[in-house]
Length: 233
Ligand code: HPA
Image (cartoon, rainbow, N blue to C red):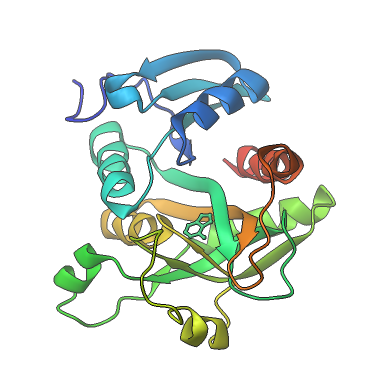
């Protein structure tokens, strides 16, 4: 049976899913890295594919941008399709001056401004953390592949265009590596339903210095990040 937002049948989606924000990225990665990739979802253009990476069955599903969109797919992947491992692969804006564009970050935890969490935890603050096993394996695999990674905590924001000029000062001071828009809800929902989750990110821009990389410049580090995720999926 299909879920509300995915037309796949149960069994069409692998136990391990890579979750990029952009559905066309999902398509590109499936075409580049997977053998016998089959598209299982076209609803809302949020493409999803299942294929084989080095003989291992894996899926790649677009999540859309923001925790509202990503939360829907994470919930349905776990509850309707029995997905066990979800690895977000995406970009973030750096919040530390010494982070280079293209740096790969393995997120240990995600602070954030999820309204869903504020509501659920009654204004208290749930520490949304990655699964340790996935985190450890990603770290070890990156070393083995000679890919330089930084491990640390990130912030998931529901707004990209902020109105508050010094919004990030306090987060920079507290060592947040970067800002993106999905991981806090991914980690929270995965924990709630007993699935494992991780986010691997590449720095696409630096919020403090204003530096930004072109689509082409992002390609190498994006591929490095994908390789780590596919190897541990
Ligand atoms: N803000 C939020 N999400 C992002 C950013 C950013 O600056 N860069 C990449 N994803």
